[in-house]
Length: 188
Image (cartoon, rainbow, N blue to C red):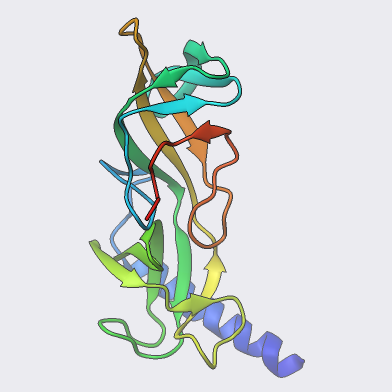
């Protein structure tokens, strides 16, 4: 047990050193025109299945534009992922362009096990190579999970526009709690 704790302390020190050596990642990091589902997004017509608040300004929950009621229909005009806190992964085995001790920042899920990650000022799309504990199978150790929200600009038939904030609730991939029929989004 002491060896495990000592190893974690050493890896944490290496990760912190790498973290402070990297260029700064501006938070929130906003990715424009994102669809986080394996089979794509159909933004033509969605249906709210519960009350959902739409805000006036993307990224700002202080001013409400309108509230969607159950069975309201609306198209989505824009879909941007806001990474409020990047995930942090410590590389434990060399993989692709990453070396042991590198710190990689997880931004967002892009479907089919792929994620956008940020490393030394560049964004890469990589298959998940990290886990919490199974370091025999994976090349990276999760230090912290990302926190992100999907902001959708919606428009009502009355031409009123607003932004819906869907908070990601999944540790791997995406899952939103809001009750919305997303039409043919993410269907084969």
